[in-house]
Image (tube, rainbow, N blue to C red; front, side, top):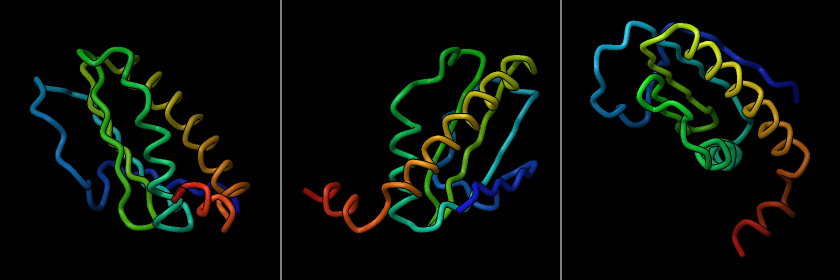
Length: 113
């Protein structure tokens, strides 16, 4: 299935609150349907492997909400926010494509072993 992104100013439901941060004038949230709750959990685990490169400038929260992946970003610099979101969307598309390709019964059996 094609990757479908719904861009909003705020996600409908963020799974966990972001840690207290200094005032961040720039925010971005997205929510995308993955197809299954298991697929959403796999994508979130894949995306959370790497920490944000500039945690003092950009903070990221990614979680699974049912069959959706929710990403929320806060930043003190607009350019850093753009770069973080752009890289995140590239990785999100890659992870969703991997789940589409390998997310069948075989992948679930391997994941539970």
